[in-house]
Length: 356
Image (tube, rainbow, N blue to C red; front, top):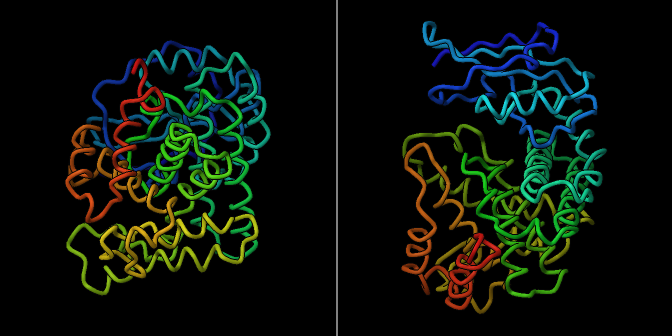
């Protein structure tokens, strides 16, 4: 699909005041091809200035192109009616230019406590806001120079985001309502983080371990930032050398994060050991379950579960039941039986689904 961007022109926000035509068939496109990043409406605070120029995606069936149409200018006050008009039209995302992501990060930091501590904010909106914050932080980390300074800033923000997730006990319940199914390194990490923290609460783990599961979930694939994009995006079979590059991401992530004071030791162990198999056939050290840290074994199960239940280019998402069955079939070769058993109970609990 050919795409083009028109995000150099500003337009008055009146386009959002009018009743918008409801979106017809959904068209799949990569916003990054247009120099754009998606932004959930749930993170924009009515009555406050928008942090960047906002755009809507419009597909022209005649030209078969997706274009970005200006909707609001940076600094315009975001109106509740704009959000309602967009939701009624079936559009729950707007778009911002990729170069505005640092401004978004500052916006999130400024409004995070206000949104999380507001009793009027719904549980789902809090969860989506925290997801958007975490995804943006990971994007900025992956696109940084990976210096100690940039990694330290990213780790500190990760720590803050995990703390915010624990401020409201309702955020980590009914997790299935808010998991993101549009798979990427970033959304996968955020899903794993929230699933792992909810599982930790279900298991009555100490708060310190719940927070470590959250940080571990966000950072466990940090080493992927060192894998060439061409390898990660390759659609044909990987060579033996390319498989080796991907397997090395665990050591790369460990070495990147080891000097960062904001990353606790048990989080480093998650980063290094989340691909060990229970029977010792995994990597990087071929450790058996007994020799692999407990939190790393938890992340291994949740990593596999979220990957299976997310939409991928080459296959449809599995249902929670199908994914649970596949994980059970590979126990005890890959996964610790006691963790799989408790994780399957977790999937039937109110921490995962409503009304269980």
